[in-house]
Amino acid sequence: MKTKGIRTFGRGARPGLLALAFLLAAAGAPAQTAALDAALVTQVTGQVAFRDQEGKQPPAPVQAFMKVRQGDRFQLPGESALTLLYFASGRQETWKGPVNLAAGREESRVEGAKGAPPRPEVKLLPARVSRKMDCAPLPLPRSSVRYSGVIQTMGPLCAEARQELKAAEAAYRSLRHQTPADDFTPELYYLGVLAEYQQYPEMERLLNSMLAKKPGDPALMHLKDWAASQAGKGK
Image (cartoon, rainbow, N blue to C red; front, side, top):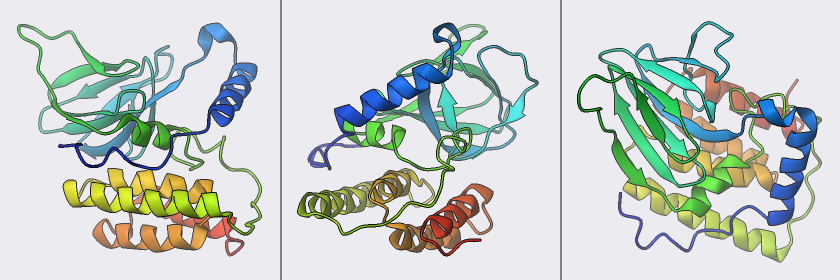
């Protein structure tokens, strides 16, 4: 994917917020066992399974829009595919099975390959976009506990916020123009910005358009229910 011309996206996550998120995460788990979110599953085809880095649980199915932690391991059988977007690097990898992978901080590594290891198809997104997706306040799979708090109160937007939302919308439309229709990476980026600024009705409209392309998708339905509840219209 060409990234020239889309480098003027909205500002990245605020340093103070990132520092606060890091301190809260560090307080909630021992340093030696803490695992950071490293990537996001933007597409999955077939029966792809994963284990966490400790390997204490049996393999579980990979879900679309699932956050991936450094050290997670993936098993892709034949006729399967997995697309991962790494937050730190903006590296988007599409792997086709059979292959076994381990998630790193900025890219995946192949495990147990005989002969020349397979290579993924790679696209690069601006890192400020992928970092924004990392800290987006969305209840994505494996992160629901962190973002399942009480309904927030929407207040009037300041001029700076309106400007950032306008820039984010322009970035989303630029990405959408360059991305295949079945790849929801642009939408996930824009949903994160909308959630940050508590624009829940707009989130619902965007999620409805996504569900029109992928009816009944459980992750999208969950996000829609969450947006409705945050707007005060849910149960």
